[in-house]
Image 1 (cartoon, rainbow, N blue to C red):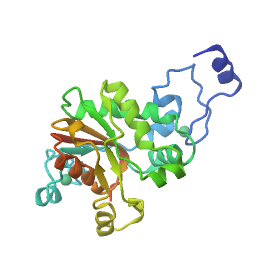
Image 2 (image 1 turned 45 degrees about the vertical axis):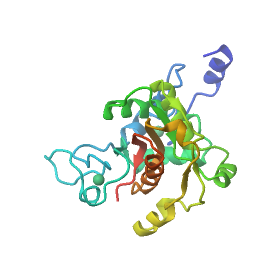
Image 3 (image 1 turned 180 degrees about the horizontal axis):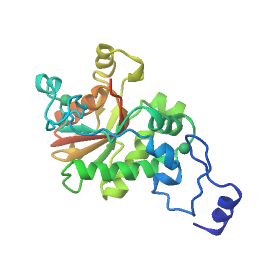
Image 4 (image 1 turned 90 degrees about the vertical axis):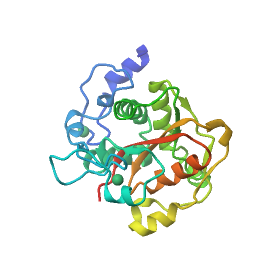
Amino acid sequence: MNPLNHLAHIIYPPRCIICSDFLWRAPFDAGDVANYICPSCLQGFSTIEAPFCSICGTPFISDGIENHPCEDCLRTPPYFQAAYAPYRYEGPILEAVLKLKYGGKTFVAEAMGQYLAEFAEMRFMLRKPCIIMPVPLHPKRLRERGFNQSLLLAKAVAVKLNGILDFISLIRAKETIPQTTLSRTERKRNVQNAFVLKNPAGVLKKNILLVDDVSTTGNTLNECAKVLKRGGVKAVFCVTLARAVL
Ligand SMILES: [Zn+2]
Ligand SMILES: [Zn+2]
């Protein structure tokens, strides 16, 4: 940290982005979530523990069983290999995602992305070099928000995994309504054929790690995976920060 930042740090000690408590920490390295979120909020992050669906990551209620494909995934196998998230989308992690998307706390994406990279590396046998792709925003939404939170996360994931960041090939051609506001059947229809692969030659026979902030039913990830697989991609792995458990 340069001396000016160090001074600013002393005059304005950093606060937790969720509860605004002071973070009594020494000057830091930007890759650590604990620089932005206090220990008590971090403890409130609810992790998704096994057993869960080995494909879509939905946690199972019953204990003491191995991870296995859920009924939905057996009936209609998704286009992706697997889609996992470290956290349930509730409590402090929900607050943190909202701060990242709507509260101007975009700086937290770097630390969260690094964490997500470690999580993906642990869960998936990723063959290197891997192509890292964010779930794209529609150009209109991108103009309104000014940034794509998934791209911010994917960028940090790519740096950490030493992967290739590709935010050009996959585009969102159809404007969609946020999935969280819709019913299960509406969600499927909402994202259907929303994505287009612009440069299939660049991703032919490649492994893709698709990154998003939150997944609900996995329909968005599956639609992206569908377009990628039809375009000749070998395998699609998906990772999101949090997953809404319905
Ligand atoms: Zn806090
Ligand atoms: Zn499943």
